[in-house]
Amino acid sequence: MACSQQCMPEAHVTGVPPSVAAGVAKSGTDPASAIPDSSDSGGSRSRRHNGTIYVSLVLVAASIVACFLLRGALRSDPGHAENETTLNLDTFVVNLEGGNQRAYLRVGIALTLSQPPTRKDAVPVAPLRDAIVTVLSSAQPEQLLTSEGKQKIKKELLIALQERAPALGIENVYFTEFLVQM
Image 1 (tube, rainbow, N blue to C red):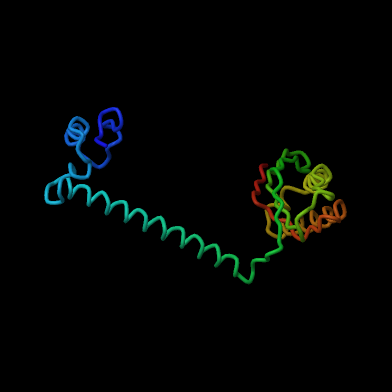
Image 2 (image 1 turned 30 degrees about the vertical axis):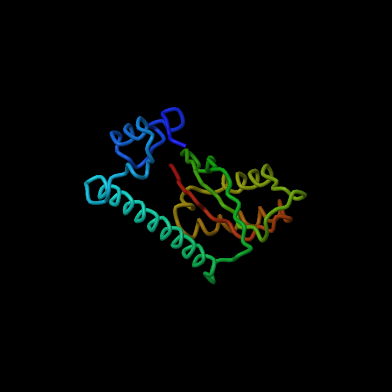
């Protein structure tokens, strides 16, 4: 069946210069015979385009392989616990006991849980936040400026949180953000 403009419009002829595609659509000839041979500039341009596609595909494949290898390396890290679950809490801003001066603490906290919570023992966010605010607001600003003071407040937080939510199995407290303003 010969092609006509109705069954093969110019927009559907790909990889062919527009002038050749227009001639194919008008004459009704086979599109494969109308494609220029590789000796003219159009053919070499097409080969360069194909080369770019192949290089792009190789780069994409290489990045996917690298991603899987990196992911596997992180999983095989002996210090990385497979069953460890981290619960990130919203940032806290609390007033600190500072005598006559005003002091504030802005802190981000993440908790390490022994296992992910199930539906029946969902995370009790309100009691956790209450325990954190209570412990943090009782701290002295000067105490929080030292590393010993930060470690002490972490231990106090861990004890308070374990008492408030024993079902969560809280194992550690991490500060993800820590700013004392005096």
